[in-house]
Image (tube, rainbow, N blue to C red; front, side):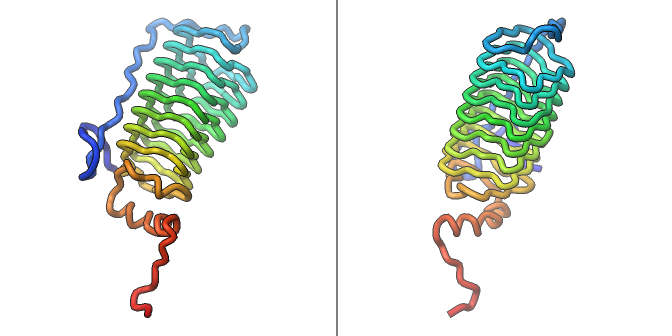
Length: 236
């Protein structure tokens, strides 16, 4: 599958600037999370490791997580609205309805996550790597993604409506039923998408690079958005 590693420049000719990846340096001796304490709103967590915790329904809005690791945690309905996740790892987390609205994620790796209906509208992602896993109905409306890599992910009906994507790549990914309505793209590499299915917003793909085969696959939805009627060959 195509990879954008080592590509430089931007603009025409199928050349895009590769996103910068996060460089994590987690503490060698992290602080174990005290399970008797709540995962609370507006709290500061520095160098804390959360392992196999079930945080269903927790309200941690506005919390700050620095140099933290969440491994194998259940995040059903967890509220992290406006939270800051910096230099942190989310590994094999799972849950439905995770709320990251207006959150800031910087230098973060999310690996092998299984998330449904994660709400990330208005969030800012900077140097974020999403590796493996599956995310259904990921809401990124009005979000800002800069230097973001999707690698080996399955994204079912992701919503990028009104989002800004700059230096974003999709490597070995599936995009099923994606919505790019009103999105703004710059240096977005879609060549590594094995299944590129865009239901809305195909006309907003200026600033992205695709393969010739992908362009042919997108032709019907592009024609529909342009109001272009394609007559059968030989039609009078």
